[in-house]
Length: 242
Picture 1 (cartoon, rainbow, N blue to C red):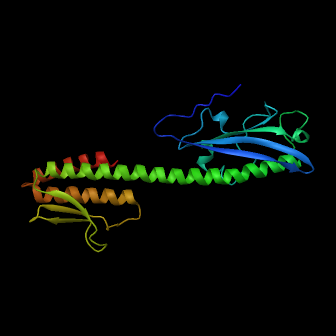
Picture 2 (spheres, helix red, strand yellow; picture 1 turned 90 degrees about the vertical axis):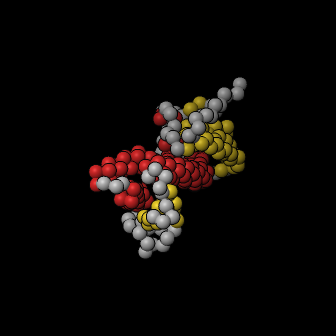
Picture 3 (cartoon, rainbow, N blue to C red; picture 1 turned 180 degrees about the vertical axis):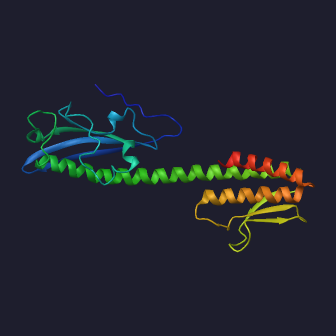
């Protein structure tokens, strides 16, 4: 009989599969095992009881899923270790490593130490790969969000200024203000090189406030209209920003 395998199909999950195989003489006796690690980026394995690795000796699970991955402490202190599950099927060897309760292994046994070493080597590849995948996915989502925000801000500027101004974004240099208004050309330029603070989101908020202020200043005719327009702009931009 074959095991039915169904990988997650949610749009925000990236499934990754890694195979493990070993077949050799270890400490004068045959050790043979194979298996896999499965990772889903960037979601926890559910149910959490399946987080870790299950060792199956001749098809029988020994203990439960070990969420330390046989004491792989290099990565389990990060949140990403909860993205990984795996099973190892031992066909030959490892019997001498079984403790009397047949629910755990003697960690000093040579076969167990070899199994541990092989799995840890594979886990380096697994975690390096899912870390890179998570970074790439995060950057792509951030770029998409930034583009949506830019387009929304362009629409807000055009609508609230009644077509008097259009929003542009350009590198004007670090010395230039974060927002520059060219009334003759009908342009409000958001200076992408201006970074008053270290955090990107904080700079975006500063830029949004300055942008709203300048539009209100150059568009409204009275103080009352200016205050009202500034408030509307802040609400509209922050609704997209946060």
